[in-house]
Amino acid sequence: MNASNAQLTRPAAKRTLKLMIVDDSNIMRRRIERSQQFAQLKFVGAAANGVEALALFKRTDPDVVTMDLTMPQMDGVECIEKIVQLKPAVRILVISALNDKATAIDAMERGANGFLNKPFTDRQLTEALAELTRDA
Image (cartoon, rainbow, N blue to C red; front, side):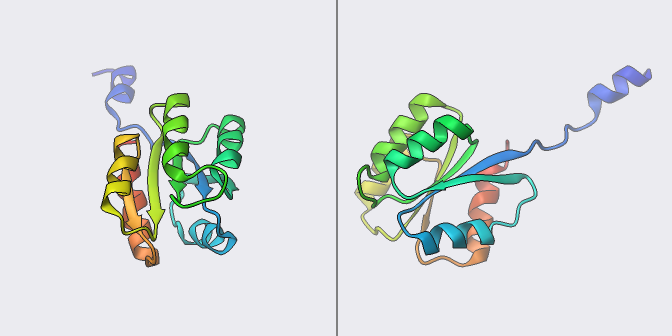
């Protein structure tokens, strides 16, 4: 095997993924930003509602989004659908206190990839993001 073939068989380094946080609570947005412990994730912005999230998404092109469901102006379920239309490969983790299983299922059917209930621990967030980005 020559040197050029050896490079082809080496496992690829994980690429940096851009993270966008969407939640109407400033406290929750900052907590998620501070709590995520992945060198692979680079924070690119936060939005307080679905309308802001769509505009920010178009400017920053994130790979990973955390999304609250209950927000003013445009809720998370509608925002998920619009974001997935813009970038089908985006990975979305819903983070919500909503215990309505039908809404969670709706969010997943529209393109969300995972769900984390509020309140959550730093470890639960880390595990959920790890699962979400496992094959990225």
